[in-house]
Length: 472
Image 1 (cartoon, rainbow, N blue to C red):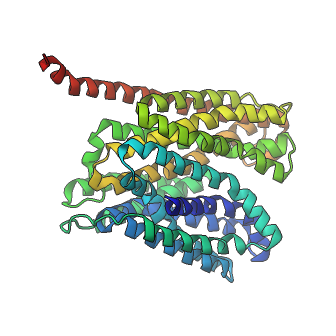
Image 2 (cartoon, rainbow, N blue to C red):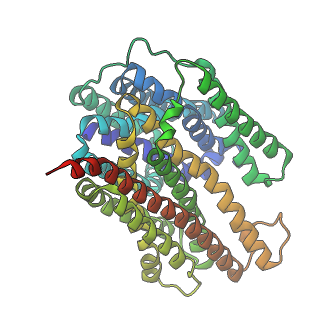
Image 3 (cartoon, rainbow, N blue to C red):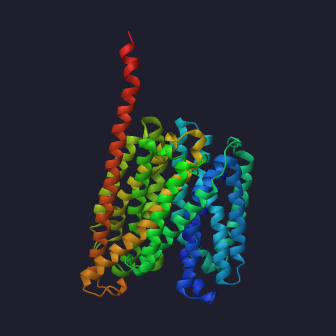
């Protein structure tokens, strides 16, 4: 468990630590922001596009084998990133690093589900959830410290000893799972179609965020993604050994839980506007903003293990429904932020969101893996990871566009104006609008949780009814 946790922690920290370094990279590598942002985009793009293919390989070749290879590749990519002479090399090495990270992210939950029995799965996934929360919390702060003390290269080089340690621990202590049936074959056509579809979607959403969703390039890519997805479904329904066994989605609970996860991460993307509020409205310094942004992940990390244990004991449905209800209420409370809020008031407003998410994520993850056939648990873990990635990929541009439109409309400014030029009152209106919409999105997820609760109760009644009626 410690080896898996180190791998998850390393990949999570690296997803956020680089953002802090972007201004430094612009200066030291003599480039511009439009170019340097691809240091982040290339990493996310690789993870988004390869996660299902990697999960399928895990089911075929053995999850431990692929996970360990991912740790080794991530460590090599980190070393090369730390030695990159130019921004072009850095972007390429970040893509290589992403290839390793996707192996760890796609199969981490599958390894946990494989090691722990169903009665302990929620607690184990809760611990993993806490590790993710810790990584999200300390990533920006750790990045700032390392850059200030030693230099930007250390944010990558620090991964090398951690990655080696994690690979050794996983290799030594994690039980080896057997590869899948030798009759299984990889679906190259499905893999290529899905890769192209996800790349088009991710880049289309990125361009939509930058230039607006009416931009022709963004529209072409998003239409191509929709057509690619339709073609992917046709391919998967016609081949003997598909990437994703579409029959898995006939399990209503499995599908509902994945949609719930997707919706929650779309809504959670709204928190990225909070630094604008903290800096432009409350006039906090950068280090203060970093501390305030830790409220939600720290609260999630505290609650996640307990929610996992409760899900093991009482089942996940009631816990997820309660967590989503609390998270939706938390978004409504956050929408009341104004320029007069004190630090304690800010923390108290964000705490319900963190508590609700902490109560939801571990039980929901456990429910998804519990509904998947054991031979396809790698794919289930990959779909879970994809729901998070697509939620963020969709949520960031959509919430960003909503924030900009609310702020600029309230300020009476033209569409091309930066939100930093808007008055405080307009920024407050933008925050209110984003978190009201986020509360609606999470409420929709809560309605799905209620539906899942009803379906499971109905299933339980159907399973126990005949035995009860036939008993003396």
